[in-house]
Length: 430
Image 1: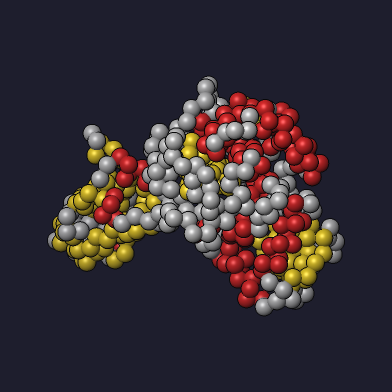
Image 2: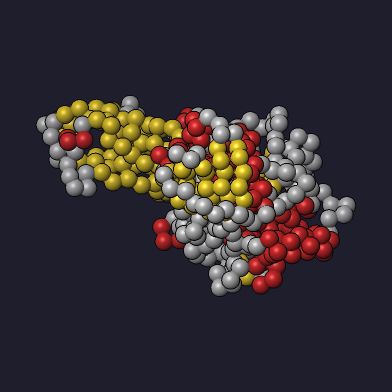
């Protein structure tokens, strides 16, 4: 099966960002910038030109670079690239923004960003999956590909479906090709990984006039988990998920075709999609809110508000948010009170309303918020999300050690990036 998850193009997205007192003398591009926005524009253009090194003399307020510093402090090194480069989208080309981000080889050890505090120099060392010549080759073939699919007289839905089926037919999922992470490799070798599927969907949709974005993250669980890439596509002024890689098996299926936050993973709720953090953050999440439910053939598919460049002013479908009461049927104990004798094992439960509600919950974690010393060690706590005879629930098991007041909070991360807590508190008795 071509859907089998492997170590893929973005499996280990490691972007090294360091702040040092040393400078790098040589650069393919040198420039001056007075704001983070200008820095982004310079790096974007250098990336489109496949420059391997950019040195920027920064003349603006140093605090403007806080997003880069915060990416280090918060262990989230993709904020700069995903949160800023994706917004630098020139509607006259499909080579920048998403196509650029998808082609940056973050796992390459030569990829890093440094900042010389004394000289106020930002230094970018960049690596790519696709050379400038290879991208030019891709661009010369895109018109003939779209012509072969047949775009004339088609609805937007039919165009997306045709592109989806072409990409699935074109590519055999394989990591043996030298260019397995690029659209160039997909066209030339017809062997590629999820990164190439996503880049093909992006470029072909955009060139066909359909707004599309590249999404990076990981998918699956347990030993099947790994780095992954997919897309969001706009139809009828709403955005929908699309994963061509997982629709490509022995035959083409549509399990992950134009889905919403509630049903993207309904084909197999145990193998979820998890976007990288910046996609859950502003400005991305505010600009590209995902529809709650899947697109249905026959629904309006003309985009009057959303442009090919991806801006989305006045989207009538606001950011998807959920109230806990929409997803949770009940808790056990119902009053959320912990009341147990020491040395006796008990459980806390959160029961979801149905399978749909459980599928919206990507994962959950627990934290002892009070009285950690009153729980037995080791393995005082265990947790999980399970399905049992039509019931879907999360649970935490615990055993008391000695008398005291305690608290446990279960935190749920939803498919749209939203988080909410369910707090239990009480006491362990003699």
